[in-house]
Amino acid sequence: MASTRQCPFCGATVRSDERTCPGCGAANDGYVADTARTVFLPKTIGELKEYCAQRGMPLLRMRFFIGEDYRQPKAFGIYKDGDRFVVYKNKANGERAVRYEGPDEEYAVGELFAKLLEECHNRGIYPDGKPDEPELQRSGSRKKTSQLKLPVIVILICLVLTMLFATISSQNHRKDGYYRFNNTSIYYRYGSRWYTSDDDYGWHETTSVPSENAEDYYLGKDYDSDWGESDFKRSSAWEQIQEKNSSSSSDYDSWDSNDTDWDSDW
Image (cartoon, rainbow, N blue to C red; front, side, top):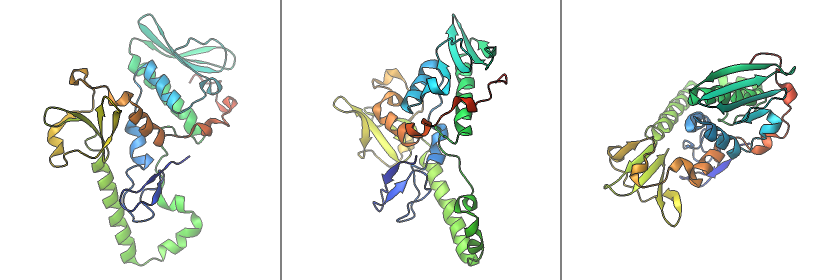
């Protein structure tokens, strides 16, 4: 289910699955296909649990058991056994197929996360953002004829504008991460938006950020506790970004685990 926001230029309502504002044509920096696949990749079992919880995934119905050595048939799972991590699939007949067993938690989580997304995508659910589709496919076959009849100059203008919007969007996310201005406050930039932290409100969006030569103050994408601030990616502001770019929990209401191929090894 697409979310909506107000265009910062004209105030029109823009859906998250629209590349540009329908009111003024400005690039939509909240377009899910531009950001969602790189927003967050869980690297630990705890982060994977958090990812699923933020999206309202009914893991029991989906048959995914995170942090649990579940022994019943029809299940995917991951758990820690001593200093090793085990990723498994229990087939319909109860037989277990081990996908990975070893000390690399990030790799183990990545294996199960990839399978989780695959199962979602097979059902038309995109917790990591809807894939980009060709314009003609989205428009429908009945519109193809009329599009081909457009004057060449109009088509060229459209192509130029599309390339321009894509460039602007990519530039907006070129330097996402942490910044420190004047050796004092820590900021986080996400796209064209800036966030800062204080004792009263925690991390929140702000407009009082020096805009000139901002990249000179770039600290990086990874959090460092020595900065004296909390991790932005564990804040409610970050959760709101995640929610805006993810599928609605209602998308999982019709999930049927019988649609999974439980006879294969993975």
